[in-house]
Amino acid sequence: MPEPLRAVLVDDESLARERLTALLAEVAPEVEIAGEAASGREAVPLIHDRRPDVVFLDIAMPVLDGFDVVDLLAPPRPHIVFVTAYDEHALRAFEVHALDYLTKPVRAERLAEAVRRVQQARQGGRGADALDSLRASREDRPIVRLTVRVGTRLRVVDPREVAVFEARDKLVFARLGEREHPVDFTLDTLEARLPSDQFVRAHRAFLVNVAHIREWVPWFGGTHHLRLGSGVEIPVSRRRARAVRSVLKGE
Amino acid sequence: MLSRRLFLPAVCVVFIGIATGWLVWWLSLPEEVLAWNAAGRPLTGPDASGIWRSSFTGAAYTTLMWTGTVTAHRALTRRIPLRDARSAALHIGGITAAAVLAFGVVSAVDYAICTAMGGDPRKVSLGVIVGVAFGATVIVTTALYLADFFRRLRQAESAAVLAELRALRAQVNPHFLFNALNSVAALARSRPREAETVTERLADLFRYTLRASDRPTVPLEDELEAIRLYSAVEGVRFGDRLQVLIEVPDALRRASVPSLALQPLVENAVKHGLSRTEDACAVRVHARTLPEADGPLVEVTVRDTGPGFETTGPEVFERGTGLRNVRDRLRLVFGSRTAFEVLPDGVRLRFPLVPFEAGRPVAPLASVPASA
Image 1 (cartoon, rainbow over the protein chains, first blue to last red):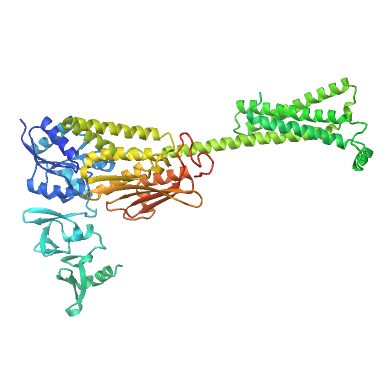
Image 2: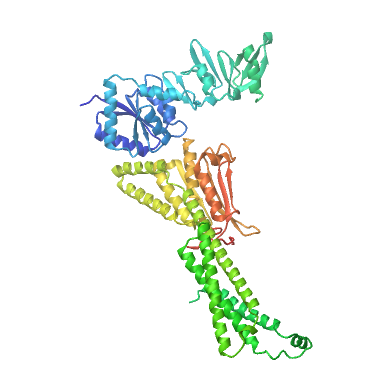
C-alpha cells in the first residue's frame, strides 16, 4: 500500500470535481480528499488551511485562474497537478516548466500515473522546482488578487479594496478599512505589479491607492501628507511629492 | 439543335441579313427609280425581283457565317482553355478560318443558284453584304467571349464568397467540446440518463454545425435551436450560474440569418460573462423588426449580465476571432446594409429582412439586390 496522500480538488464545475473524486477512489485509494474548492478565491485559503500533499488544480476559472492561484501560494507549497480541457497557452506553460498536468476528460490511467509521480517526488524529497520556474516566469505580470493573513488564515482580496500598503518591522501590511493585515509581497513587488495609475509610492514605506486619497495636506518644512478616506494620514516624502501630484492630477 | 441561349441571337442575325439584303437592293436601284419613289410612285421597278434575291443572300451570308463562328467558338472553348496569348491566337485563328470558310460556302451556293436561275450573279452588290456579314461575325464573337468572361467572373466571385464564408465559419471551440465530454464522462457514472441527454444534445449541436457549413443562410429558428442546444450542454457544467433567455417574435422565425452567426455570439457572452465573475450570468437574445424606407431590417441583440466589454471600440474585434467572423459573414451574406455594434453589455446586429427560402441564397450571393 503506497503512503496516504492528502489532496485538494479545485474546479469551478462540480461535475468535474465529482469525476476526479470517483476516479481517484478507483485508481488511487491511498488518496484522501482533504477539501474541495469551486473557485481560485476559495482555493488559496483552503490550501493554506489544509496543507494538502497534492492539489488538482483547474486552469480555466473565473477571476482567479489556476496560474493566479499558484502565484498566491505561500511556501511550503504542495505538489500541483494542473487540469485543463484545452488551452494552448496553458499546455505550452506545462511543457516549458515540466509541470504535471491532466487533460479533460480525465482518463483513469493518466490520473493513476500522475499520482505515482507525486509519490515519487515526495519520496525523492524533490522540491517544487517546476512550480518555482512557473512562478518566476510570471513575476512581471499584474497582480489580479492578493492574499492577506487574517490570524492564521489567508484571505484573498481585490487590491482595489486596499487603501494603503505599509512596510513596517520587516513586514508589509495592507490596510483594509479599519484593519491592517500582513501581506506576502514586498512593497517593491507590489509597486511593480500593481497598475501604476492606481497605486503610487508616496514614501519609502507607503504605497497608496489613488482612489482612496481624499486630501493633499501641507505639512511642516515644505512636506505634505495625504489624508485617506478612512481618516488615516500618511506622509509624502519630499522627493516623491512631484510624482504623487501628477498621479493625483490624472497625468 | 438551337439552345435557348442561342435562339434570340439567331433570329437577330437572320433579320440583320434580310435587312442588309433590302438595303443593298434599295441602294442598287437606278437613280430614276429612286426619284420616282420620292415623287410618290409605287416602288416597283424593272429589278423588283432583286429584292428577294438580295434578302435571301443577306440572310444566307449572315446565318451561315454566324453558325460557323458560333460552332467554332464552342469547339475551341471546349478544347482549348483560354489561358495565355497562344490559346488566344488559336481562338482568333480558328474563328477567322471558320468565318472565311462559311463565307466561301455561301458565295459558292449563291453563285450556283443565281447561275442556275439564269440571273447575273454580279448584279447584287456583294461588297456591302460581305461587309455586314463580317461585321456581324465580329460582333457575335465578341459578345460570346464577353459573355463567357463575365460568366466565369461571376462563378469565381461566388466561389470566392463561398470559400470565404467557409473559412469564416465558427469553428468548434475545443475547450467547449472537451469540457462537455468531461461532464458526460462524470454523469455516465452517477446519472446515466442525464449523460444520455447531454450526449444527444451535443450530437444535435454538432450535426447542425456540420450541416450549416454547407449553406450561407438558415432560418432564424434553426439558429435559436442551436442556441438552446448549446445552452443546455453548458447548463450541465454551470448549473444555476447560467441562464439563457430567448425573446424573438414568431414573425421573425423564418427570417434568413447567416448560419452560425448567433450561436457564437451567445457562446462568446457565456465565455466572457462566466469567466470574469463568480456570480450568475444571464444571456438575453432579443430580435425585432425595424421598418426602414429601403426595406425592413432585422435587429438582433445579445446581451449578458456579466462584467461586459472593457471597451466598445473596434479593438474588440482584434482580440477574438469569434466576433470578427460573425461581422464579416454578415457582410458577405447581406452586403452593405448591415451593422454590427459592440455595446457595453453585448452586441447588436442589423441586416435586411429576407424570408428564408431553401436553396435560394440572399444577395449578394444571388447577385440580386435583397428586397423585403
